[in-house]
Length: 183
Image 1 (cartoon, helix red, strand yellow):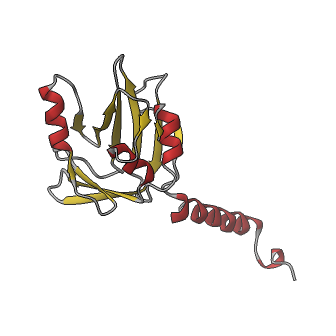
Image 2 (cartoon, rainbow, N blue to C red):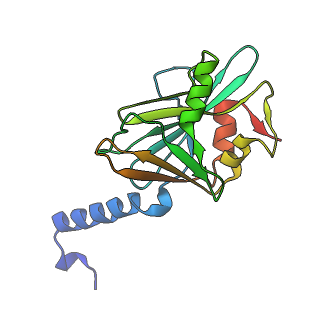
Image 3 (cartoon, one colour):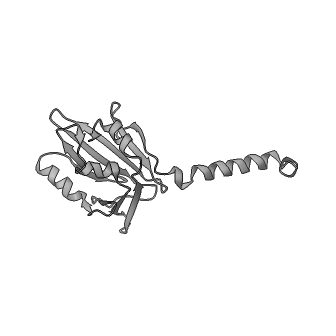
């Protein structure tokens, strides 16, 4: 017997809407990597991007200079969270934690902006080279072939929080957005 005689059309549309909403929030759909415009309004720049189940967004983008390419990671926190003005640290898979404050300071020593944090957004340098190919031992290769990224940060409310991202499938979008390729 068809379901329609027992359910009004308004209720059916509500049920279908609920099913669609559940499908959109399904964890398997989170962390999918895409290529789109780089954050910050640079009309020519591209970024590899992913959003986790908590609504936090991660971008990987490049700045190409005459003599080298710089690749950056940029994190945008979800609603209700804000950085406490301190650079975060991160870990790829079970590797050693990387303190992005040290990256920022090294850039300052060279008169360059390699890290910045304000409000809900933060970025830091993850790779620099005068080559267009990434060797398997380079740090950027970990971003391309790793399984997971965990970013640890101090929230404006004083609590320590983490943002996690699935790195599976990141290699192609990172290569496409940045113009570098894994060797």
